[in-house]
Length: 195
Image 1 (cartoon, rainbow, N blue to C red):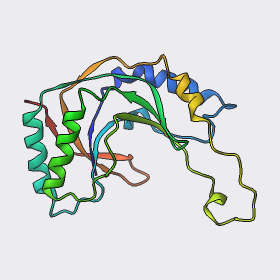
Image 2: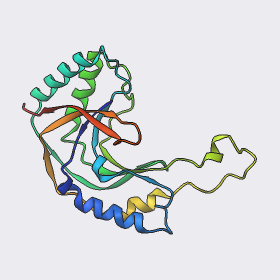
Image 3: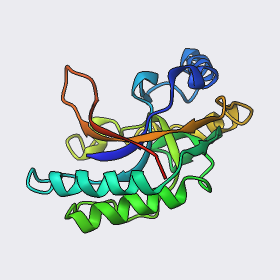
Image 4: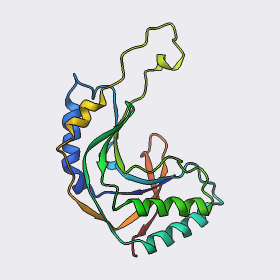
C-alpha cells in the first residue's frame, strides 16, 4: 500500500505528450523500458509496504487526522530525473509537499504500518522502469553480459523543458497494488486536505 497524490489528467497532458514522443523513438534509450500508463501516474507521499488488515482502521484514522491538519498544497511537475539506470521520473518540487509527506509517514508508522520505505522521501512521478534481462539474473550465467543498461541521462535531458500545468492538490489517497490483468493500482480511500 502507499499514500499518493493523484494529478488530474488534463494537468499531465504536456508530460504525456513528451513521453509519447520518447516512446516513439525506437532507436534510442527508450527501447526496453517499461512505461507506466499516464492513467496510473501518481506522486507517492509514503510507501507503506504490506499493511495487515488489523492495522488498516488505525491507519485510516491517522491519515484522516493528517488530512484535516494540512491545507491544499501547490504541485509543480517540471523536468525529469532518474534513480540510477532503473527509474525515469518527472521531477516534483518537493518544498510545498515535504511537510505533508513527513506527516503521512509519521502517522502511518504510529498507526502500526511497519513496512515503510526507510529512505528519505523524494518527490517524483515515475514514468518508466528498467528491468535487467533474464539472463542477468543468474539463469544463463555463461552468456556474456549484454550492454542493456539504458542511458536514462539522455531521457532526463529530453524532459528538461517539459512541465505539467501547476495545480493544487486538494486531497490524497490510500492506494493498493493491483494484480494482472486488472489495473496496477486501486484507490482504497481518499481524504480532502482541509487544514
